[in-house]
Amino acid sequence: MKKPRVFVAEFKHETNCFSPNKAGMKEYRERLLKESDEIIPYFIGTRTEISGMIEASEDEGFEIVPIIAASATPSGLTTKEVFDFVKGKIVQAINNTKDVDSILLALHGAMVCEGIPDAEGELIKAIRSVAGPGMPIVVTLDLHGNVTETMVKNANVFFPYENYPHTDGFERGYEAGKCIARMIRREISPVMKLRHIPIIAQTIETTSEPHVGLLKKVHKWEENPKVINVVVMHGFPLSDIPDVTMSVMAITDGDSKLAEDIVDDMAKTIWEKRDRFQKKYLSPEEAVREAMEFPSGPVIIADAADNPGGGGTGDSTFILRALIKAGAKNVGLAFIPDPESVHQAIKAGIGSKVKLSLGGKLGPKEVTGGPLEIVATVKTIADGQFFNKGPMMKGVLNNIGRMVVLDADGIEIVVAERRIQPYDAEIFRRVGIEPTGKKIIVLKSAIHYKASFGPMAKKILDVDTPAYHSFNFWSLNFKNIARPVYPLDKDFEYVI
Ligand SMILES: [Zn+2]
Image (tube, rainbow, N blue to C red):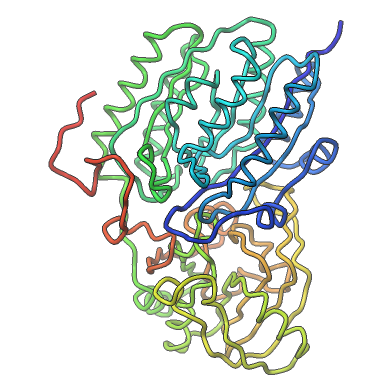
């Protein structure tokens, strides 16, 4: 018998509408832009969604037809050019390829494109309109996706990450692959319900409360054999579109009433816990003081607001200034994207002292702190290619251009040519720094670093600054989110 054939495509971007820095073709090419035969060799053996889909295809006996894989580091809007290019490739493949039974998509869920607030909704709608109503479309998402009714109406099943840090990409891709095989064999007829809860949430890992309790409840519901998937979406408020709140989805095998009951029950529980999705942040000065006073190390200072994984420029200098001012020693900082400084350091050579205007160039001074005038010794020069070895996206190859380590009187600053979130300890080990030997580690990351760095941390300090990934909702000028919303508005009732 002929094997069923399944299209696979990836298109990911988490869009932070407070950043003016757009993601165009250049930004996608720098991170990931691969087509057809290039895709499987890139993903196979990694802990990612597409790798999970590949494994499911082997177990279930279907053939994968890869179309495109595109992703860019989170930033401001994805350009219309990129959106049309990727959408065009997928639509064209569906129109031109015969004998394809279904479609697996690996999306993020919080992409905003120039002129298209609900980019995933528009994409899935366009795919549905050429694929026809009968073709199964199963989609993986990031739990920071802002799910819309358009997305739900045009896809059959969503498998978003359950874990934050996102260590379960492979598992969700595998489930999506298993699910599509069952749909092709007509064993299941999924129905999906979505409920938004008017809460915007700060970044809290799923290994802490209130998420541990919520996931227990999710798993309890999933014991019912009629339930295909239950999901708590954290949402991404910084996308600033109407649907950025927390939401729940329930997907059952043909039982709308059950799906409705589940989303109602989950929404009620989440609403009751609404004051638990917020947390306290320190100023750079407070965090540096606490870290220096702490008797052992490493102490991790998380520069959450400048996290490039959520649209931060990554080159803000607020914490670095506080470290220098306080005279901190034995510090490792990862990392500042600054191609100009990398070039100057390489030109000067290892062992040289260089005078640099470091960082603070990718946004206005109020957001980045502006460039820091600094004299430092060039300690290491390396290419910025390294594989993730920690639990998140294990096996994925990163390429952040050339890298250098600058030693500024006991503060070792990693500087690279491109932006990504430093969530894997290889960012230090690639350039000869052993993070476990540091008193203080500064990371431009909000939560993801916990998967790789968490086990070595003696203490963790979360910092807020005016950078683009600040979750100080009260200081942000939201224009499009639906109101009322907790915690910006407190005096209102949410009726389920
Ligand atoms: Zn996420």
